[in-house]
Image (cartoon, rainbow, N blue to C red):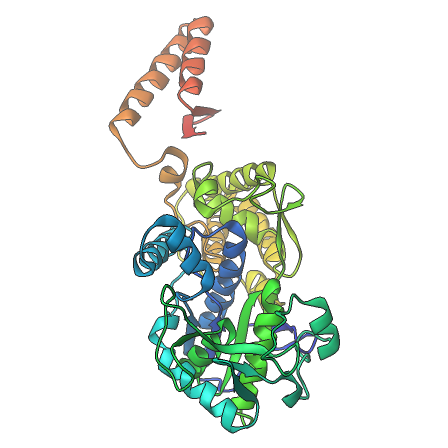
Length: 448
């Protein structure tokens, strides 16, 4: 196995990955805030984590992957009020929808999936510790982290605190000692979720949630913290600050992995532009593997442009790969070193996919060992998990027999040189969404 290198956001360089404990690699990713369906931008971070964890599991004897659920947040409260439902019902439903969407995308579940509301006591312990250490203060029912108390604040995002404050939407409040200080605990009104605390009934700030959950399940030091680049500041910067101030002897996260953002048809995705796509929107148009291949077709650190044409191309690529598998028996094989080398080079999924194309060409030329290597290599990317016949035709149904009968009727018409009837039958099948492929061995069909 080639040695893994990752681009570490804090070092601002691609560096060799050396686990804190080679026997047990620990990974934390920020999960969803559960108030709505997940969109394809959320999916990109989940897919990056999925490929990373698959590779780590292939390389190391034990991996613990923690991905949280944020189920207390002002957006959740606002959406529940707008829907006229209680918060618990909203978060339970959207969490279930998130799980279903990721399962459809063949994203493997985390080992541990803590929920913010189940870790309030741990958050309060950390907040108390920050106050005791002189890094936080209580004011007007709030508890705030004192940015000035942590000299290396800004080291993760690479900017000094004054720049960060100037460039951020910072809440101006009289109870803050410094405009950049951020909330660890805030008071709750009667119509807001709240918990009793030494500072009055309230709820946690967003950043302290992940610090508490990562500490509870992974300890003071763990290997990799990941998420979208939009979380680099303020969320991850603030996580890092409060965690290192709580546990100055620890490292918190030893490597930071951030994926770039996603465009839709060349524009930033937003509801106002009408180009906001949930995972379910796309899966209504194309198979999940096509979306997965499209997203993995760009390096995780490069901006990805989602297009309908790109989705169609991804499906055609998968058609080619599945034809390579369907051309004969597929022997068991090890993951090819070329695919492993590509993924070990900072998760270079485009290069790994290029290697799959090479193997597919060899398999289509009759090399069945290459077909085995293609399936094994694609498996590292979570691809080619379908039976080829199911990929092309869908799950077997009574309709299949009718399609086969029409194809047989067309073949008979061609043999009788009744080409007008043969063409009419092809058109009839095409109108049903059936694509025919005539080969020397006969006629294959698939659903469009």
